[in-house]
Length: 294
Ligand code: NAP
Image 1 (cartoon, rainbow, N blue to C red):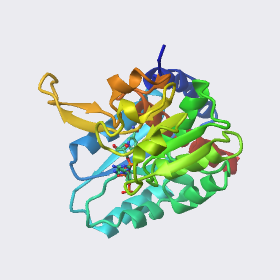
Image 2: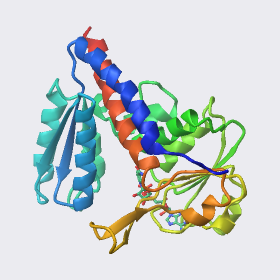
Image 3: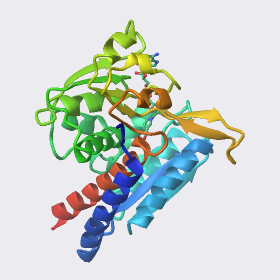
């Protein structure tokens, strides 16, 4: 019987635990605060940002969105980040990606103080995470996948994990987390130039797909009993939905479900875990700041 790895339910449990952490910090005089900077009017980004700040408020945290116009200059954006860097009530800063092309996104991300970089995209945090330093903010999607595997008792030690995709946001940090002592997986990363992708995916005990292409992984590309984590988020037209579209992952869900032992749905799998880990990182940032001041 295939298991559905339900990120919505796991997130509900984790957020209830985290509400107690927030209450404890508040009792010590600290309300964890996240500020999200949104440039422009991309509807998908607006929806992501709204769900992040709503999730903060539901836990009793401060969630603030700063909307900047599409044509904001680099200097103006840096000035906003400088202000947030200095603000003691702001523990986490997130600049929603993608940014308009005229803004140098790497320089923007590096402008956030590493102690407030709750997305974990600053090179200092990437390096700390790579060497396994507990002070690192680990990017939220890989952190959420690790938490899901742990809480769902999916063993990783000695398992072959194949990751499709090599992005800095998801796949590379995830590979480093999985191969570290503790999880102890053997990891293969694949990408656009990997010849005959199925040769690799069929070897996977755990297959993680983070590409952004509907139906990239079909049932003939996996071995029986595989655990499948589908990170992809693709909008497909759907006239039966009020929004006119629905979200699907990168995996042919109905067919692969027949072969797998466990699989994440889209939506309701990795997505909610990502937001939950953003809340966790913001609480960690508030706790670290408070510990330094105490
Ligand atoms: P990305 O930076 O665009 O990376 C995509 C990766 O897929 C690249 O490494 C690319 O290879 C690889 N790729 C493209 N076509 C391929 C193919 N035919 N075979 C094998 N590999 C291929 O994307 P990302 O930021 O990692 O995001 C990936 C997907 O996850 C997107 O759908 C995104 O929306 C979703 N996502 C979801 C969450 C969530 O919370 N659920 C969070 C983040 C991202 P090259 O490097 O060779 O180009």
